[in-house]
Length: 112
Image 1 (spheres, one colour):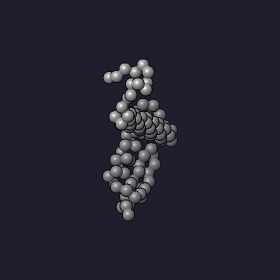
Image 2 (image 1 turned 90 degrees about the vertical axis):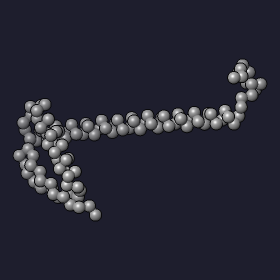
Image 3 (image 1 turned 90 degrees about the horizontal axis):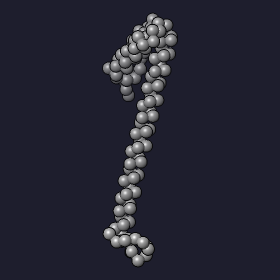
């Protein structure tokens, strides 16, 4: 069973405590990252309204997640394609070794 951790949140004029299962240092790191993102959003947009800042920052986080998913899916597809190509080349090599080309059966093919 995971240990419970209490995280004190004090953001955008609102304060509360959360009790969650998880590592305290991890939760603090996530909280710190969110605070930094809020400050960056405020600095970059000039928005002062706490609700608007929270929404804009949440949208930025969602955008980051989607970009990571897209990158991961693209990377996975590329890896799968490379693996498939290697398997096909290996299979062709095995077939060529097992069935030597008989030049008399295929007109126009010169021996190597």
